[in-house]
Figure 1 (spheres, rainbow, N blue to C red):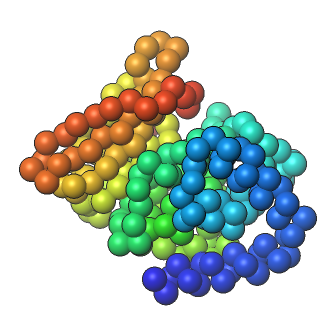
Figure 2 (figure 1 turned 90 degrees about the horizontal axis):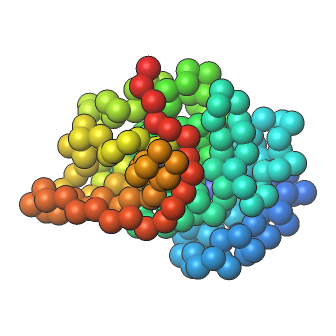
Figure 3 (figure 1 turned 90 degrees about the vertical axis):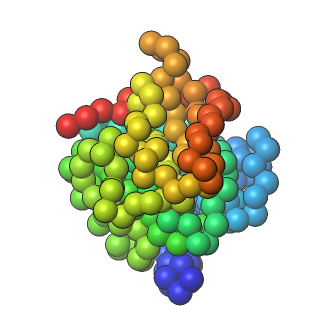
Length: 228
């Protein structure tokens, strides 16, 4: 809990210095997220205090709070704000949860997750993005996020089991290695390719007995999940 409080204090200082974006963040939350049915106060507040623009290339920051994904280089994007909110909301995070994220990208999604959970372990296959995301997160004071470059299909077995797992790139099917790293009673959320040009967000629940159930909830478009 102390780590989260330190992060929030650091964010308040940052936001005071970047107050020209405060109105844009508030409009983003109100018009793009609340209006589409996301009502969790914890999720909405996490989005209000996370400086999305600081996770983007300088020349793209003018589009930081617009209603669409934005390229961040290396063929990757920072997801549309609503999709970040939607996937965060359906994870049903608690302060006691340890989270694995596959696909760090800019680090923005991990930053949001960190304000709602105990620890976030995040893996990025593009070395340059792993380094830049780690640097940004450290500079902004996120002390409960741990970044590693590598193959997301392998997960992070030495830190397993995880209470929640989130994929931000689309595999053809949910990797069994990640399901095995999910704690009994845990939840995994991922965009999954269901056809050559179609993807859906899938929620996987792992029962206390280890039995797995899945359901699809939303059509989406993510970059594919690749191997090294």
